[in-house]
Length: 151
Image (cartoon, rainbow, N blue to C red):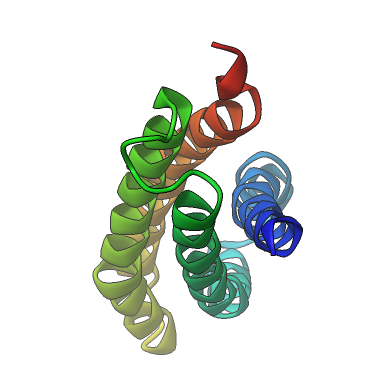
């Protein structure tokens, strides 16, 4: 059971954090030279696929993470500091995701559908800042989860 939970946990984290890293460091600069409407439509198409997949990853992370916490560590009290750091940063990431999903994302979609490009651009800028913050938290979370037991 431990191997299955850990495997699911790692794959879900790699998908989410790796997807943000790809979007922020590779796709964003590559899409920069595109005309505004084309670039904004591209981002709508990317996020319309990525954000629901992140929701699945979040569910997998919560189930596998708390499964390991209680199955392998015997609960919160016996878990090391790195587990608590990983849990705390992971929960912050989830809150930022929920804000992104329910606030700027719907406004961005609406603006793109209505061809209100300046509004869509402002919403995309807000999404970019949230993704950047979540990417930093994700890197901290990965470091805590992978190297924290050696602290």
